[in-house]
Length: 282
Image 1 (tube, rainbow, N blue to C red):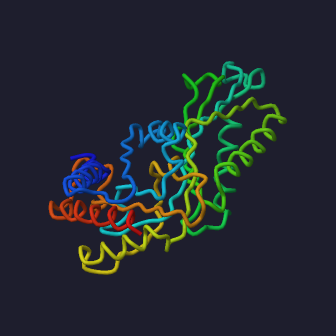
Image 2: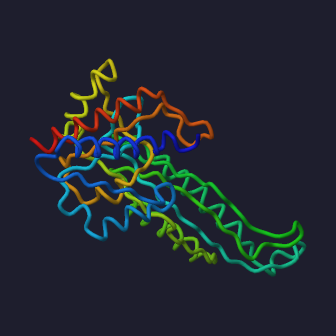
């Protein structure tokens, strides 16, 4: 069912592993903190609240129980930046367009120029910047110029070209179009930054050592094209901060028939028990 892979199985596996560790008299050293969040798919309000409350201030590492590949892990991820662009014009009959201003025209031109520009940005370690024009609205009828047009854009950012740089570029483009007579404004709906830590950080090394027998092969370290709550929870951490995205799943995320093998679920409960115990002991 939807959500099994992303990431109900991972959440339950975390809870089960923590219960087992406690029943066995652990942890002997340190503390395991469960941060179960709401709104991870849109807005990440839960992890933002945890960050603002200081839940990560004394954290020695962070594990996100979401799959990156089958039995694989990730130590970096793209950011996600959702924006709304609003263009205002003046509605008139389409037979006399010179008396009004078509709100769609400058918005479409700006979006095309931005799309062409972001395709020129060199790809980084996690891949290229992705500028996605997802929703475009404007106009009510075919014989009248629209006085309002809006666009919803999602930008997948990378550490080498982050959300602030996207903001600056779009701000400059908007200013240029407004100087030519347009009236375009930009509003951020979600602003989650990319996260990059070293692929050989301490947590990833433990994941590779403990997970190999369960995977039946070396545990690969990949770059995640999506975002997780780490966008909030791991921000402003040093490059060697112990961070890993590692959870049960067979990469069927966001489908109505998400699924995973039952044994994989049990494997990750056992993996998490060993991972937390060894991480805190070292």
